[in-house]
Length: 219
Image 1 (cartoon, rainbow, N blue to C red):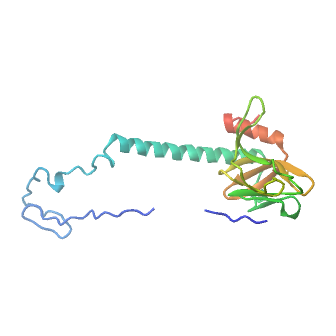
Image 2: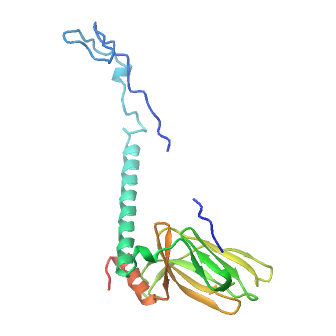
Image 3: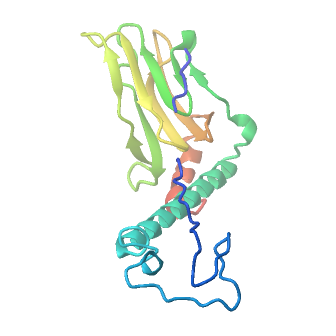
């Protein structure tokens, strides 16, 4: 089974002007030395606010820029933490591949964009789920963010397929996936820069990773 990966025009303003100030004229807009310079009349283009309200000069505009910068900083910080977490787990670039195939007869496949599993053997895998590890949990050890299930099953639910959308870099858990027509499989994967790595059933290591994601401490 193979899954396909799915995936600003800047406005240019003419900032030049003719440059016919006072009694002198220069093709580049400069005023010759000694030439008289007349004061711009009120309301002329030269006295207009270069940053009209609602673009750069307003409080809303400043706030918007500040929020965008803050979001970019937070995103970069999260990315660096994930990379450090992978290093602590002992993962290297060679562990990451484009697509991970699970089970026999291509029962399931996962890439950095989506995951898909076939329901087998009269309903094996029909209750499968997938979740992203987002931090520690005092009761379960791992806080999970469950991915939305896109199921295309028969009326009886005993055959068909299930698909999940991967939500960016991080660690994911899959549970109850059909590995054949007779048994299911569970485990963890890591996603980084468009690639995936198989973590198997390293739950102890994933619990440490969950704490690191929440508190920045590897214990």
